[in-house]
Amino acid sequence: MADKQNAQKSVKIAAGAVVCVESEIRGDVTIGPRTVVHPKARIIAEAGPIVIGEGNLIEEQALIINGYPENITPDSEVEPKTMTIGINNVFEVGCVSQALKIGDNNVIESKADVGRNVILTSGCIIGAFCQVNTCEVIPENTVIYGSGCMRRVQTERPQPQTLQLDFLMKILPNYHHLKKTVKAATNN
Amino acid sequence: MASLLQPDRVVYLVRGEKRIRAPLSQLYFCRYCSELRSLECVSHEVDSHYCPSCLENMPSAEAKLKKNRCANCFDCPCCMHTLSTRATNIPAPLPDDPTKTAMKKAYYLACGFCRWTSRDVGMADKSVASGGWQEPENPHTQRINKLVEYYQQLAHREKQERDRKKLARRRQCMPLAFSQHTIHVVEKYGLGTRLQRQRSGAPISSLAGLSLKEGEDQKEITIEPAQALEEVEPLPEDCYTRPISLPEVTTLRQRLLQPDFQPAGASQLHPRHKHLLMKRSLRCRKCEHNLSKPEFNPTSIKFKIQLVAESQVLLTLTNPVENITHVSLAACEEDDPDDINSTAKVIVPSKELVLAGKDAAAEYDELAEPQDFQDDPDVVAFRKSNKIGFFIKVIPQKEEDADVTVSFKIRHDFRNLAAPVRPSEEGADNPTEAIWLTHHVELRLGPLAP
Image (cartoon, rainbow over all chains, first blue to last red; front, side, top):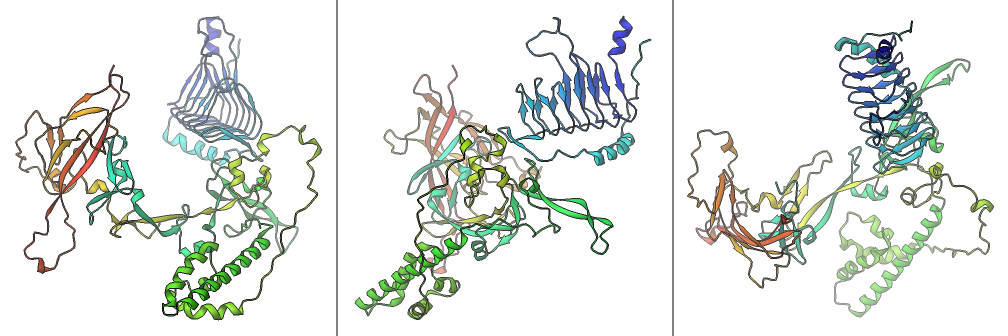
């Protein structure tokens, strides 16, 4: 029983992902292939597991946290909810993301703050320093920008950062140690 | 430093046409009148026009022609940021061989802040990086131009009649003087008549000869009056029932930035050329000397002439000039008409304080002699190169004062080192005579501790 719990709390990094040693990953986190996690990024799964898809770019000092909601003490019984993050998302420097469900091709710009009750669909862009802590589903291709968090819909979704990802996957191993890839543990 | 981070703490009184209280960092000092000047008691003149994003200089005549807008740069119609040109590769058929396709570069405009692109409005991608983008034409341009011409002609005719009447009455007086006067009157219609447009550089005296001849050659311009329609287009039937999709409606600010069209839908917001900014020079109204004259080059932020008050007038504790300065403080009298804001009494040191001059090399010179001013420890707290800290006693008048304000007068001597060299008839006058200046200073000290 204890082994199973311990096995569940480990970090599973798929082959092809580049995760630097200096990043802090705690809890039950699954990282898909072709994802790049920069040093000093923090992925913390306190109140449930985090599943991250392919092709994501998580930059320095970004914080992806599946934490307890503020008004519930950690001792009481809360069932763990899984945080899912899709493919081709970009988490820029210094952003904080607590959204439980993030789709594909989203961009969360620097120092943005996304709350727990927000669901990002696809192609959304949360502008720099915008704090979105409403309780809603953000429709596709929405851009939130400006100090008043103005919104508009753009006609095309942001392009996946394939060039940047390829460049980083070549260069980062030259300067940083990487975490070893661990396949998902099978329960025997 | 009160001057940088909390500028409103210490304000100086400026005795101009209006009595303005402003911090020293926003004031100028006219050294010919030896007085403080604020932005309201100087005259502002336009120096040059430049575009804030491409930093291109533009002469004033060209700026007027292009309606004060840059030719190369665009503003995002959504968030008013500067648009940047981006390129994509699209496959396009080669002109020689229609079956093969080659990659060609296509350019479109995009905003980095709100992610607006020119494709959102339906503007096609251009094959040229710059110069391909056109602003949409205003459908009413022709009518407006015709109306403007008609009114210009009317103004010109009125001016001529006025000229003729005045010349007929007083034949002895010079016609030049009257032409000068009437030009200011006619200018109310903008660019003025064709005469004024032609003589942009010529002196006014040439006008007297031209006025009558040119007027007779102009043809008559007639306009049709505007016609009122009886029937107005009715509102669409689902005007009240159709749900509004907010992302498609433009905000008032976006709409009013384009007064020609004022589009209600976001799909009709076209980008406009960027507004030019200008550099201004300031001139003292009394002595007509320049107080601040910026450099002509838009990339340079320096000034040719810069007489800001901070470098000339004493700050509360620091001596900016290079000679020894004597400062004496005096509390305001009971019925001082300037003293309206103070809420506390102040007792200032009665002795004169001496401040050493500013010496730029003193920091690096370790063998400098220590300054030996004898300081009364009750008055002077510390002294360091050209700074001095001194004590004042404040007696608040009210018990629950949210903001204790104190005012007093500061009197110091000022040497005008850059005064023009006087001729030798004045004898052996010391060119650096000291003038005593008095300033009225107000200090906002903040709330009282409970």
